[in-house]
Length: 165
Image 1 (cartoon, helix red, strand yellow):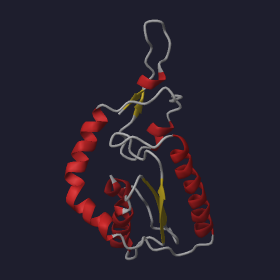
Image 2: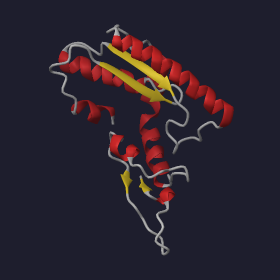
Image 3: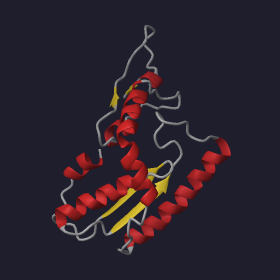
Image 4: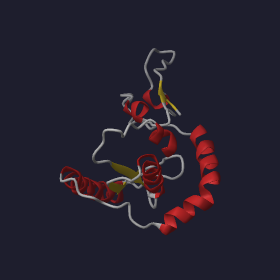
């Protein structure tokens, strides 16, 4: 998915390139992969690279935290995003960092993880909290989501079934 996303980038006029990834745990391997692709294409990597821990970053694989634990993760994410915005605004150079464990886990498990993620995605559904706004479908870089308005026999629009993975 990262490689497909990177293919669509036009960096020919970019003086400063940065990336921000979200992760549930140790997910910076995508950041390193993107940095490597950018380095190969333009002779230098990203100028700045950031990761933000989020709750439930990939629901088909694990349940997101709830309650106070979720709130704490979101508060830390807000603080991290403020730091990131300041760094980007000042043009600061920020290396993706050294993440040998993340790279090793990615190298050893990516194939099976991708298959299990695909299998889990088959059973994915959204909760009643879905508003049907379609933002998720618009921003999904792999195009895995489609918003479809389904009507039941009474003519109502049940939002939890509106998202097709």
